[in-house]
Length: 125
Image (tube, rainbow, N blue to C red):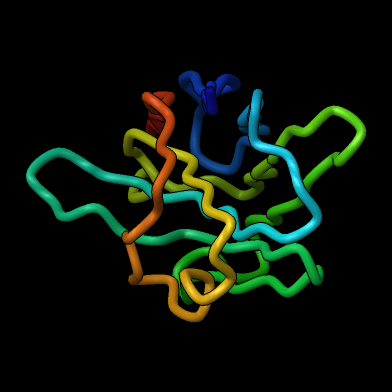
């Protein structure tokens, strides 16, 4: 059974940093697509960053240069390093995973099979 568990969220001031983690138990294999999404109150869920098993990454324009997605295959854990945080980054952050590589073709694609429960990030000005 696949389970995705996010952690690392919290409250920081503008300009601060956080590193989110997504532990992916039961999600093994050499081909995968993984993504970080976020959803702010009264806003639609949006794709933040994707990573596929070939190492290809995509980022939303709003986070380029500030966020970095990575994966430690030995720990089967996905990360999102977030630097220079802004109040507009405040949201619930979710990780998602799938074995179908095509889901990584677009940041807006939310057709992932597996989802975590989310971790809250709050950035104060």
